[in-house]
Every structure is written in C-alpha cells, then in structure tokens.
Length: 125
Image 1 (tube, one colour):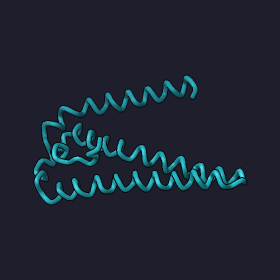
Image 2 (image 1 turned 135 degrees about the horizontal axis):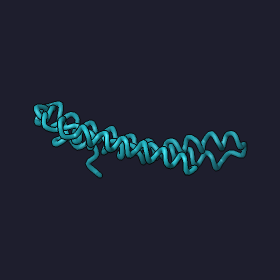
Image 3 (image 1 turned 30 degrees about the vertical axis):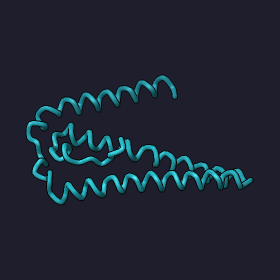
Image 4 (image 1 turned 90 degrees about the vertical axis):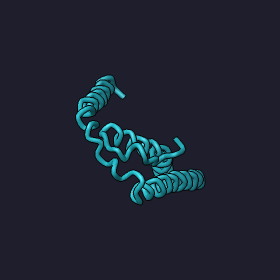
C-alpha cells in the first residue's frame, strides 16, 4: 500500500471517529430503545443473534476448509485460483462476522440506544 493511500485511509478513519464522537452527547441523553429491555424482542435478539453469528463462523470455516482441500487437488491454475478465492472469502467471513457484531453493539451504545445495555450479540467476545 502506498504512502498516499495509507494517509487517505487514516484521514477517513480519523474523520469517522471524530464525527461519531461529535454526535454522541446529544443522542445519548435521549436513551431511545430502553423500553425494549425485558421484552420478547430483546429475548429474541439475545437468542437469535449469537446463533446466526455462530452459524456464519462455522459455515465460513467449513467452506474455507473444503476450498483449501480442493485447491490442493486440482492442477489447473484457474481452478486453483477459483478455490483459493472462495477459501479466502469464507475464511474472512468466519473471522470478521464476530467483529462486525461487536461493532454493531458498540455503535448502538454510542448512538445512545438503550437496547445496547441489554443485548449481547457476540457473547464469546
């Protein structure tokens, strides 16, 4: 990655973080969504959220394992490249899904949604 690209990425991340921090205090005073704590909606989120995230992790890891094995069996470079792309994408899914779930929890907390205090989408982080 070139220096110019690196600088642009840093500038974008810094801008996003400082922009989110600017909107934190007015929104957090409202505490929207806290009336959902203790309801069936909160219960469903706490049951199905971790289930879906866990399933995506397992399926991503399984597809990565199968694609890795298939890439080693074939001799055609295009076929090997095809399976390697599937392997890399599914492994990336298995790794990033819990991180994205955690970021969703953090974003709900930053926005002041009261539901963030009672849901746990990624209980194993």
